[in-house]
Each structure stands twice: as C-alpha cells, then as structure tokens.
Length: 357
Image 1: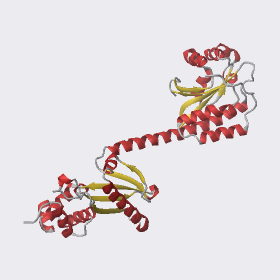
Image 2 (image 1 turned 45 degrees about the vertical axis):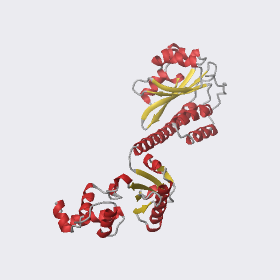
Image 3 (image 1 turned 90 degrees about the vertical axis):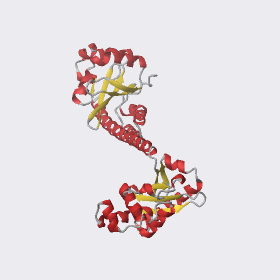
Image 4 (image 1 turned 45 degrees about the horizontal axis):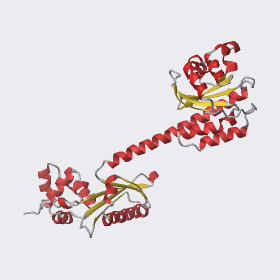
C-alpha cells in the first residue's frame, strides 16, 4: 500500500478527535470500523504511518491487520520484528498505550528487531495502544514517525488512550450487530425448513418475513389473498381490541381449499405478530381441515366428538376426567374457529370424517 503523505507533527486537535469519534459512530460492521480508523486516525495522532492489528491476546500473534504503510515493511515486521517488539510486550502486559521513547532506553530501542523492521519502511518512532473489546484485548493501534520527526508526546499518548477506548466500543457494537445478523440469518434458514407456512408482520399487516412454505403458497393467488385478508383482520383486532390471538377459517372459492389462519401477537415491544397457515390438502379430504393445528390428544378428542360421544363417554375412552375433556374441547373450538361441538361435528363430517352410527 502507498505511504500516506507525511503530516505535520502538530499536537492532536479536539476537532480531529471529534471527527474520529463521529466516523466510528456511523460504522455498522467491523469492516466499517476499520475503514473509519484508516480514514481519520491521522487526525487524532499525526503520523505518516499507522495501522490497526487484530491479535491473539495470549500469544501476541497477528490475526489480521489494516494499515497505511508499505507492504514490504509489514512483511519484515511479521517475519522478525514482532518477536522482539518491546512496545507490543508492554501493551500485552499492561493494556496501556506506550511509545518507543518511553518503553526502553534509546540504545535498547536501537538494537531491537522491531526497530530494524521499522527502518525498512523509513520509520523510527513508534506508538502502540491497546484496543479492548468486552474486557478482552482485541488488537492494537500502531503509529509510526520517521527519523527526524519528533517522538510521540504525552498528548499523543492521551489521544491514543481515548482513541483506543472509542475504537473498542465501536468494535464491540459492530460485533454485536454482525452477530445479530448471523442469528437472524440462521433463524430464517431454520424457519425455511419448517413445512408449515409462517408469516411475520407488523401490526399494520406489512409483511416482515415469509418462510419458504408461505412463499410457495403464494403460487395460488386466491389462497394468498385469503391469507392476506385474514392477517389484516387479525391485526385490526390486535390494534383495536388488544387481542393476543386471532383465528379465522376460510374457503378459497376457486380451489375449494379450506385454510385456518391463526395469528399470535408477539410481545408489545416487538410491535409484530406471527401467523401460521393451516391448509387442507385435497387428497387428504378425510381429515379435519385444521387438523394440523391440533395436538394429538386434541385430535383424539375431536374424533370422539365426531362419533357422537358424550363428555363422560369420551373421558372413559381417553382415560381422563370430564373436566379435562371440557378443557381440551375449549382449545379445539378456539383452534378450529367453531363455537360448539355441533359445529365441530359438522366440520369433521363435511371433511369426510366419521359419522355417528
């Protein structure tokens, strides 16, 4: 990479620090943070060479880097300079910024391998500061000045400490942002493997996400419109009446398919709802149209109801109490959008289910 034009070694300015902080605040990803550093670090600590290293906190070995210096210099530094760098040793040990005029004597600095590697790039003075992310050393900021330029000052060290703190916070925020994106991608990928059609909307019925099954269902325009209308009704109920669950059963007049659309309002802070679509497949006409919405026990109770059995008879068959049967029936009615057992029986019979003898 070409060397940046040599700046003056004036004291760090507050304006430069403000621009540096603003650039970091606007960065979303780790890559954005690194680019913001490269574009504005020279305003915080004037130096012709500077870079950002990501390192292993235990070994001090490099994981990645971004820098405004010659590539040849970086290669030399990684080949032999890193193993004998008193600045890096200090930063790894103390988690504090330091420069070459303070870390060791002048002669010791002249004799170390890091100084020899710097000389390949035409540099002499060096400053290094830690970047701490979530309490752990994430990497270092490095600045270099040429021989003949002033050594780094106390003001430079103060600016490096502040810049390192800001860079650490920006990196932590970017890592959380990226991890949130990864989690969302994993969640969407998982939901795409669910055979059940699933739609997430806001409370204005604007679609935020459809899984693969829901997208495939859109091939039937009439059924898709039916589902969309049901979602709109559900969202109106949620907004106007404060309901948390809404179920609607409808028939597509073109295909004669019956669908049960059940919407659940998510926690208030999310301002969104989840809708499941249960659809009767034509070659499964002997099943309750909303069969998949019921648990296995609820399916069993519904089948016994369709045979004309009383709650007491169902309780004996299912080895449960009559009160348990009543509770199961309440849930069945809610899930299948019927008001009583007579409507449930008719729904099952209409779908080709059992009739009482």
